[in-house]
Image (cartoon, rainbow, N blue to C red; front, top):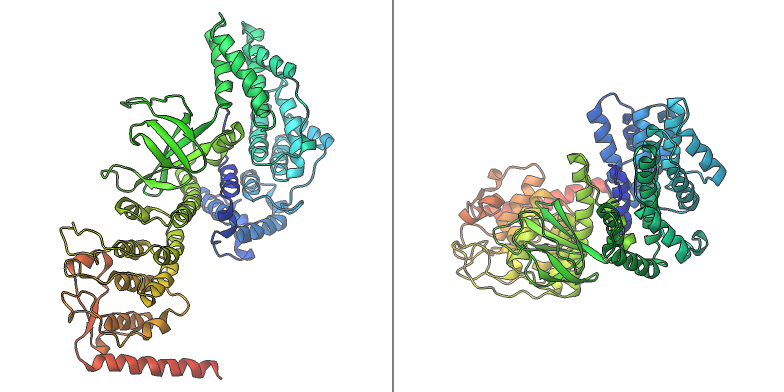
Length: 597
């Protein structure tokens, strides 16, 4: 199996590149160049927690176009001063890997020729620690420049194939190779970068992989030869142009090896490489917005984890659908690929699956860097947040493409998806998919008895300012059905009032003020205890630091809205509504006078 190090930034780099459009459209964390430079300076701090916090902040910025530009500029300014610090230099090397690919020289990584690369590779074995460390950092950073990749791949592989090097040098070489290899897997090679490979070359590598070991130096040489052959075969498997021919040769040799008297360990080595050549997929298990487990599945091959009652078997998969033949959590049938879907069991609230199609060795190998293991919890959470945003966006797009009405389990899943992506999705969803009445089976009189009403409830829990804009449009266009006696709440208004308490968006206050006069009930069973006009007035008064009591506003506590902090208000005196309207008009006049004509 391919060795994967804990370079979380390599994973973030692939998460950004494999996420496609989301990497270009994700909302960038706000920062200034001065703040970026302060974070960079903190990478050299003696305080471990401060270094980690600065590194996480920079990684989040590097995952977005605007943030990456700031980080790149900050590195160009601060890197010379930070290169003298070991910890800072390592974190900088990781950070450079996290920066998304850009135009030539945009990443600040120099273009190296074969002579320079060989010199740096030799320096990994230098007597001086600082020289070894600087060479490793420079080679790792050079992998960020795509023009360096052909020579880096060729020369680093050749150096790793040398058996007589120290353990420290080999460790450093493997760190460099991980950075080079992960960058190569997400790079699209040009025809001139690939050499011709004859069948005889492939057969020779397989022979080397199957070669028997021995004792002493001969045994060590054999083990080294096995590792070298496996690395070369995986590199060839990552070439899509060679895949059909290489897969056929591997399959033929694997069948012959199984029928031969070769040692079991030799057959297993060939089996490992052959398995990489086969179409595959992964089933990711997420819970509470965090990625918890992965099951790797070769199509057509049963996989039975320990303690599982049945094997997991999928016989076909593409970028939209996977067909399950046998499973433990998933029943036989078609399941969506590339999107989140809820765990089928109602006992697993907050859990969902994400299936990913990995039809080629290149995509399978790249996945290991996209979703690395052995990360600290904090870095894992950072990576999970980046990936959750991308997968949520794909999920929402799929729902809109199919004009899919969210069912109960999908609505229950929304709170653990990315809040901003769900909020952006809300406007199109409420407009595209007509609302419909749903059977009332709740033991309480909650909601408005419609599908969009339940959707609005979830927006009230996780919605951002974008959800507020969507709810305004839904109310203006009457997209959410009115409540009925059994389910009496105006859920569109309830959700908007809750979101408006958390966020301000352009035009929010003016739009709310237009509804102060409304006496529409929040709960049609109890029309006099809370109305729309009083409730929006309370939001406006609190937003400007005012007191509800001076306008005779009083909150009403509905048992069903306790978890939403009861957004419903009423006026205890009739003149309270007129007083709020007058106050708002006068306030608008004062604000206008400040800005002038």
